[in-house]
Length: 323
Image 1 (tube, rainbow, N blue to C red):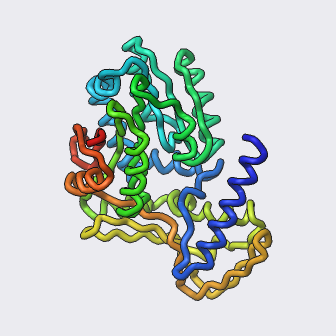
Image 2: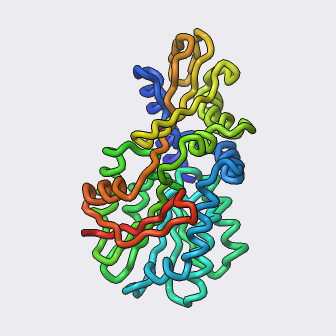
Image 3: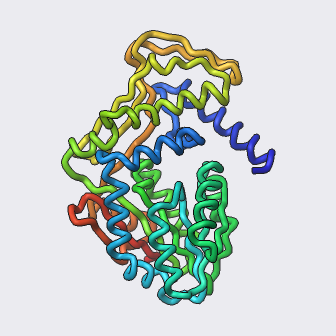
């Protein structure tokens, strides 16, 4: 990564931390959990039996890979498979393997904020699929999307898997999808994974596992602030807390201060006071149904072309196209 990119990223991190911790109520963005340790912890989460999302989406892709790739390649002289938040690429490799069987021209463009995740992904792909042209891009989604060639003859299929759309509020999701739609040509597609509403206990268990992995993942946000911004958060003074509202379909993650305390962040020349049981909101994980996704698509200038579900209807992948 270039030095100016590092400094810009670090400056944004510092500003977001300052703004979030000085706000009332306090909040921090979950995207900053993902550094080398955060990536490792999330890979452990995806292997937990309680975290059903990964396995459900993996099964959807595996069961429907031929139909999905046929739709991706439809009316495509050349294909860019662009993945937002690529992570370790476990699920995407199903699609890449199927695309290779077609002998059609395509490029895989993984985009991720984590340089560590991209480096690991590129290395694993070079070993498993040495013939695939991989163009990794480190940075924020829309900044990187602007660097990808787009035209009527090059079809872009944007993958947004893992129900990452669920980290956005309704208004944020509409803005996000509308931005994607604005850059799409008539033949382009969005392939999006969306966790579905279900038994509330199943959802709570997925974000509050008994092994403490999710807790460590959430607290990694504080650990990163300690490391990168010279802060003195005591992680033992906070608990991980998850709530789920089945009416709205919104799950929220918090870090809750167990005691009144003062935290110093030297790089920001800042002292932050916490009252006992004060919260830091760290993540939203929205759950959906078909009507909800249709509403988001409509508001963003898109429509649902088709959808795929696992056997339990726990999770769905939708293909969205321009109206």
